[in-house]
Length: 198
Image 1 (tube, rainbow, N blue to C red):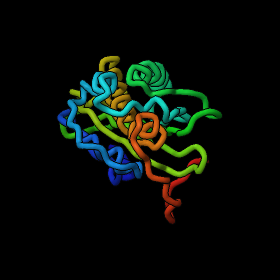
Image 2 (cartoon, rainbow, N blue to C red; image 1 turned 60 degrees about the vertical axis):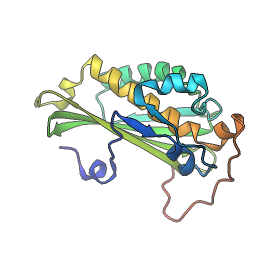
Image 3 (cartoon, rainbow, N blue to C red; image 1 turned 180 degrees about the horizontal axis):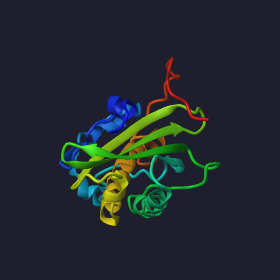
């Protein structure tokens, strides 16, 4: 079973409509009118200009922990492709504005096997966590090794959700808002106890 680290912090975004104004508000930006977009349509909504493009908020995936290497390698490769399809600019650590640490987990759930991801998005300059995005999907079956239930189809589904969530989160960052013509508020000072990345 998944440890309490995930249990305390995970939240289910669900596959229905997502309130996308939340991303801008969390990033300290002026909020735009709330736009409800089905999860599967986020890529097209960005292309249509209905959602803010995250292109200017460049990002580097600095780590992906928790999964066996064969799963993690396939996940990374597909995530780069799917993120680019949503106008997420994935670059190297030296030139990225934001750094992402990812965590994958598979464990016995109520409906079989549950697979979860958590992404912490850090400001590369100040090393402060700006966003956390997380979601889970349920897979039929409860094998002794939960990762054996994670097929290519499951990985593809996780990657698609991951790319959607990262695109929405990064679209609310000041760089993305500014590039789109929206006015972003100045970042606030780091609050006591705010997680940082080394």
